[in-house]
Amino acid sequence: MESSLKNPDKTIAAFIHISTFSKYFLPFGNFIFPLVLWTAKQQDPFVDHHGKQALNFQISIFLYFIFLVCLGIAGIIFIGVKLDSLDNLIFHNHFHELFQLTQAVPLLIFIGIIGLLLLGLFILEIVAVITATVKASNGEAYNYPFTINFITPTSVENHQSKNEQFNNTQI
Image 1 (cartoon, rainbow, N blue to C red):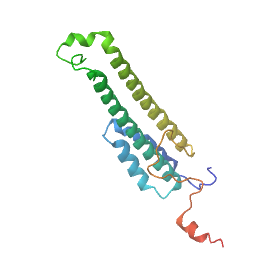
Image 2 (image 1 turned 180 degrees about the vertical axis):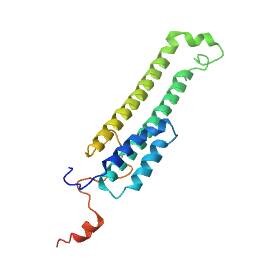
Image 3 (image 1 turned 45 degrees about the horizontal axis):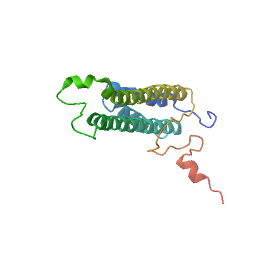
Image 4 (image 1 turned 90 degrees about the horizontal axis):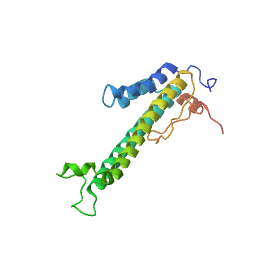
């Protein structure tokens, strides 16, 4: 693939991916910094591909996180309230009933499952971003797993400049 690209800007593409870790220091930094870097060098097809991939993945991870948190809150309320009767609430003024294991087991299992899914999402993000950074620094294209394509990615191999599109007059 490197033969189809004359001089890909591998450094900017790698920085786009690694800049997504800025969310741990600045809120929404995982969207702001890759977007700024991508728009600065968007004319380069290699940077364009990696920028779109990084932003799509970060939006997807954010939506998966929001979905899991909402599912967790809804499940905790549903299991905790036990909609069958209001007298047998796990959460009520009698604190000692919270520690009755038979009532707390479904809630603890559900919290554990949601926690494992969130941990898996975190590990997926760390591994995928590091892999994408390494691939970009080597001049290779990378497609993130489990990504919803909000910004339509263009193939690096088939990307033509506007001048090449107009000069290609096949009749």
